[in-house]
Length: 448
Ligand SMILES: Nc1ncnc2c1ncn2[C@@H]1O[C@H](COP(=O)(O)OP(=O)(O)OP(=O)(O)O)[C@@H](O)[C@H]1O
Ligand SMILES: [Mg+2]
Image 1 (cartoon, rainbow, N blue to C red):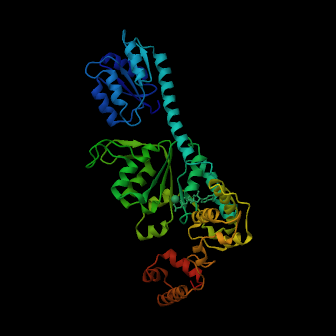
Image 2 (image 1 turned 90 degrees about the horizontal axis):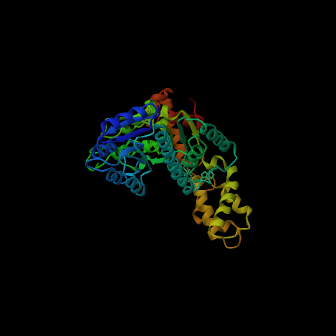
Image 3 (image 1 turned 90 degrees about the vertical axis):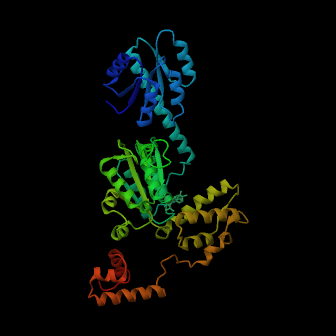
């Protein structure tokens, strides 16, 4: 039996039972004796297909169909018609019913029809996701850059794409974390399935939980109808949790349970929902530090980081800069209708020397502006936006030998001396994490 759920609506209890028993081997079935209770069930449960009588006291089949079609993503409806209601059945098809079968029902024909209907529904959903894919301009799926560091990222992403493993992507802002996520999803076995993205920092605490897990009608003021969360929408596909470091602890608990059991309840709901979803999360924060500070659950951290992909900052793979520049010059020259014949050596040198604190995103903006601003058809140094020249060529946040660093080195050295080299105590006194202390000891070559 698969988890397709069919709702059978008929006022005749014998027909209900017969159909339910006939379909029970292959599907999950639930039954309703009239239109009103059918609508209530639709409100409470996930239904994939409705099999309904046309001629019922109270709400007729047609009226039921009209109400069903007001639901978001309505399930397909197949009607069962008695003698003399064929005309109504034809009318029902015009109103959007999928098909009809006449009584007495031929079970083989009904089974075929159900399969055809479900296949059609699946194709429709797939079509939607293909359209989304086109909208996202998925031609840009490849990571540009062949530096060893980038090659490692590409290899890892390709390797993990084929699996269902949970992935954590770490990297500074603008390094390409979302691009890596796209690449994994669209190269995975569920590439045709849904691909849902949530930015955890974009919602307040309560709203994030209901966005992710959905809510039941009446769960809180304003919850007028049951709403599916992103986990349910992502069923059979990928859920991207961006800026996972911003997720509040209370939501972290619920996410942890999902990763352990693949189940959750909607906010205010009692029904346990099970979905099949691959989780990819990303962050530009240091989760290890956050765990130490108690801002991120350690158990969740390990569950999320089954596979870790670290996207390196652009300044650590400068050899990728020329190919990136060439690629984006081509792209923007086409986009803005500005024929560009070449790029000067000085321009390439300048952008290669720069440290790009905003990483690839900043580089792309610079190239676009250069293409637009450049006077002739050669991109030269004068096309570089002014603000780049203001920054030291080897700058960024990590200037070597600055006064601040001298001070830092001195203070850490002193505290280590005072504590007799006790790192835990030193870290506490310095007000930094233990891991940070180790990093700094190494950086400044202090006696550890
Ligand atoms: N290696 C690459 N090749 C081609 N384009 C890239 C590459 N890396 C990043 N980009 C492009 O740079 C831009 C920024 O990348 P992306 O949005 O993936 O960064 P991010 O790491 O998610 O940043 P943030 O943390 O700020 O959300 C995007 O337009 C992306 O397509
Ligand atoms: Mg991003």
